Length: 171
Image (tube, rainbow, N blue to C red; front, side, top):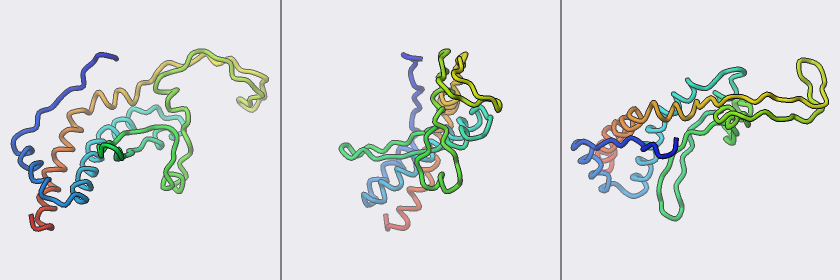
């Protein structure tokens, strides 16, 4: 899907005014508010990805999560929705098993040889010729279908949280 532009949404005047108030907050609180807003914006993508994920054992669906980071050099906050390798202690504590194959489900696989010995259906095989699998695209569909909902979640969060923080911090 190269070349397909990401839909842009315009900030309305009420959101612009609320965002201008963000600068009145202490830097640490401003960062916390922005991080939470970005995570709120990722939530519609998370929900859609979980809805779209093919379910066999449930491991793939259960591995989908939101991750947020701050770029140490530029200070840019980012949030992403990830599927596959589980790395959080909370997920391991819940017993979520690793879905290392998430990228294979998303993008598909070509026919290939699986070298054995491999146990399949209670029987052992030296090698297995896997026919490949078509791409599912569950993450891409999630992104494509929830862009406006993501923007709205971000805007709603900021509209609610900034006035609360200003009231608490004497802004």
